[in-house]
Image (cartoon, rainbow, N blue to C red):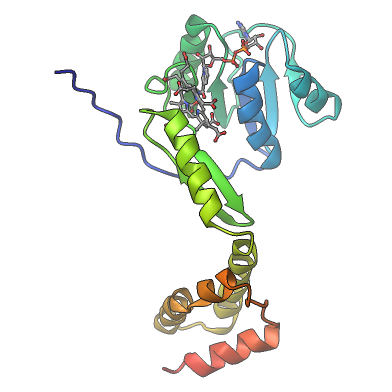
Length: 220
Ligand SMILES: C[C@@]1(CC(=O)O)c2cc3[nH]c(cc4nc(cc5[nH]c(cc(n2)[C@H]1CCC(=O)O)[C@@](C)(CC(=O)O)[C@@H]5CCC(=O)O)C(CC(=O)O)=C4CCC(=O)O)c(CCC(=O)O)c3CC(=O)O
Ligand SMILES: NC(=O)C1=CN([C@@H]2O[C@H](COP(=O)(O)OP(=O)(O)OC[C@H]3O[C@@H](n4cnc5c(N)ncnc54)[C@H](O)[C@@H]3O)[C@@H](O)[C@H]2O)C=CC1
């Protein structure tokens, strides 16, 4: 019998804004990783002798830096995050080795188990992120499951998440007592707004409505 032990991955949400993220390789897979980095306003550096037309247009628009050559040891200096996404397994291995030496988190697209992190399939609704991973066992399945979840979550989730964020801010501003805050957050999470959202009856609250809700429930 073949036994396969998958790594026990820890899911995290990484804030790459303004951070130097180095992508080694400029092909189709690099394109996927770079698209996410650009969206996150990372300081994205692509090292590759060639770029896909899409990556070239990102470069022309000033969305990425491009180092037009093959990878060299030392390229990960000052990196916050690294992706080894060339079609040359040896190069990807060398990138991973340098990343390990420099303690930079690294993704190896040609062998998930070699890098320190893998990329889940994901969907967004404003601040809501749903990420799906199979720990590398079946990336295409991650993609399909994510599409299924995508179909379950209507566009209205964006308004809901926006509402949650604003309410949380109001509660933090107005309620100093830790226990009271906790109770309000719990109450907020329990409110059946999702039914309203699904039935398209959800209407964003005004600040006055938010503060009056807080005042009503803070002493319970
Ligand atoms: C380990 C991981 C490392 C990483 O890249 O982070 C990895 C590795 C590999 N993928 C391979 C193949 C494919 N990958 C996809 C698609 C996606 N792959 C993604 C992630 C990951 N892929 C990480 C694990 C994720 C997890 O399971 O949790 C997604 C989710 C996110 C993204 O890439 O951004 C993205 C969907 C994006 C979307 O939703 O659209 C498809 C399907 C398609 O492209 O339609 C195929 C072909 C079908 C197949 O092979 O299953 C191969 C074999 C290469 C070869 O043949 O040599 C390897 C190498 C290996 O097996 O280690
Ligand atoms: N993680 C994933 O979802 C998937 C991963 N893969 C893996 O990812 C690898 C890359 O796939 P694609 O992007 O489709 O390949 P591709 O052939 O489109 O692109 C390869 C890129 O690597 C660059 N490159 C080659 N040697 C280099 C070097 N020494 N230094 C810097 N850049 C160099 C090339 O210029 C090219 O831009 C595949 O070989 C495969 O192992 C493949 C499919 C899915």
